[in-house]
Length: 574
Image (cartoon, rainbow, N blue to C red; front, side, top):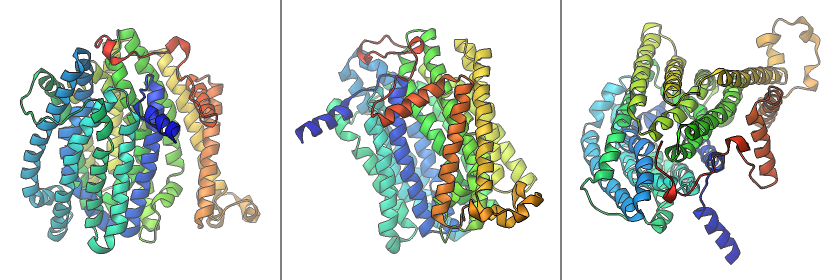
């Protein structure tokens, strides 16, 4: 037992010192968290109809805006680079900086929340005009509960930044799991008594768990609460670096508010369809984009020169494209069975499934661009440049909002058009960021880069097409109703399809068909990637082999290996 405890402590306290060792650990924990996230959404879909859920999701708009602008904006861009640099000057100074950030962050948060919470009904009547007065009051009431959760996140994300700066990625990656558990338990246990208020209370419980799971290790490493509101040089540096990112995320919140505005006009349930589809498409974005971006930021921040910086960045970009493109193709091909399996309940009917599936397929087009944006934006952060991503984001915001209103108000299209506008804006942002970082660092975008990504794209398209045809061929309903491409084939009228197809009206058969089709697509994709000599395919096979052999592979070949030294003796920046 003592050995087991000792091993557990060693795992918790150990550092991750290469991109893929850190990213792999983050991916595993994020995957577990996202499975719970889907279970959470499934639980919500089981207890509440799409119309009611739209009110709950709309209630997140203001609390989430506060979190994104005041909390995430600071810690995603500025805190880790400044804290990492301050550690080199002395641990005491670094921990003092972390304590000051908590104090100042909480003070700003409470002032902002006090003002917004008072006027919440009036604000929601403007940003969600499709809801009536009673519904807006309900949304405002839920939002005030959700603000409490954001207070815990102010502290919790400082701890996340501290631990990730010290390359302790396990505990921060565990925190979202406890957050989702809180929402699930709150919904299941409290809904019979509290109705739609129950999941809001669950969010508060989950946010507290997100904080408390990180506090012990942070305290052990040296973090202390210090009620000191006087900014020092480090706080001012964080403020300077964070300000452009805060503006960037403020733009993003304008775009999200426009989406709520238009979705509420299309129909009350539309915002639920949009939110559910967004949750699904964020799986690969978060699993690979967020995990790689989190792992790469400290490493880029401590790169000694442009050559080292370039190798680390290219490695992350190639891995992101390799993993996300086939998953995007899979979501397009398998959109209906995926939505059915995750959200299909007696309350969430077939019409809701089709609507959500359509939105998901459009969202999937943007997955690779979102993933690249996560990495590229952090490459600028590592260079202490937070202004460039803001300028690019402003362009993306204009494209997003303008396209949203043109498609919905001008052409009267459905909720899927909001996803189409989002896909267009992310495409433009990702391309512009890639061009700019190439000008800054050099030798990023060249013929080798284009050829490499083109190989991955071709392999993804072929595997996606294979998944689509397999799904159609082995689904009994396609043969019975003569749907899709089989409708005009006369030979199918007398074909004994019952012998080899699955009746997907039954959940078990649907799971089997979806999983087998997905695995076949991934095998095809991997084989094609190996045929095209895509290096990441070899890493993927080594990773898979390592999982089964219970050991991790070397993620990067010797010529591109990037050993990372301790933060205490690494030269600063580039």
